[in-house]
Amino acid sequence: MSFAIPVERRRGKIGEVVLGATVEQGGTRSSTVTIGGATNMPFHWFEGDYPHRPALAMEVYDLPPARYPQVLKDAFGDLLADPAAMAKRCVEEYGADLINVRLEGTHPEKEDNSAEGASKVVGAVLKAVGVPVMVTGTAHFEKTNEVLRRIAEDHAGERLLLGWVEPDNYRTAAAACLAYGHLLMAQSPIDFNIAKQLNILLHNMDFPTDRIVIDAMTGALGYGIEYTYSVMERIRIAALDGDAMLQMPMVVTGAWECQRTKEANASAEDQPGWGQIKERFVGWEVGTCGSLLLAGGDLLVVAHPESAKKVRALIDDLMKKGE
Image (tube, rainbow, N blue to C red; front, top):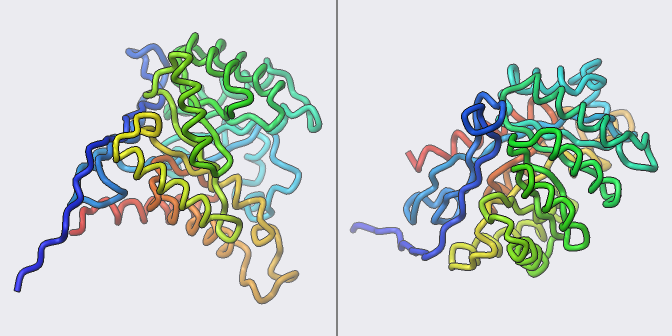
């Protein structure tokens, strides 16, 4: 007796977003990355098209956080003080499709680094690698707006993915991205309605939807991942059902969220029942990103080289179309 898998055809499509720009396109990248374009739920090959594989980004810092996990210090050593060199290794040795530059040092309560200094860090990373670059500021919106505006102007045409923006601070960054040819991460606090509202606000500014990536805010494994999964899944289903204000790719910031967990920082001596910290941390990143990949994640950010290897292998396996 034969069995045919029931097929659910949807009328919507996730928009495609091109990250980075080559010389011919007005930038300096040697390659670009396209995400989005699906007409089905993740890896449901029998129901539609899934034209672009999820992209993998790795993270570098202008200033590593005070609680930067020892397991990452062990992995990168002196490179932590040189974000450009660290980015180069992430691309050339660990296969990162993109680099995310986190500007922790710009926060007024930390180093209060200048917008000019932050832009130089981004410029050094752009010079060191040929892949597209993401830039993530801090939660101090007044300073972040100043920093992102300067970076957008100094690196016009690069199609940087800048973030993040929320309903309270989107105007300045959106205007800078419009003026200088960049993309935006639109962040909402694990809330379906706010995610849609922010995209509507950006649309009302005539911000192109093909330059928006949704950040539904990642809850790490054990720290709210089920809420993030639910919201991301709702966003993706609504988009495929035709809601144009949600038809954007989504980013998963696994690196940032996982490294702040207690499991990422407690040594095996402190918690002997938890196992070795490297395997534990890598498992936390892979578990977080792998789960949210199935909820609709199109761009995954990890920190540890071994996490990058395992997440890439997972993506490779899922892209086999059921073979």
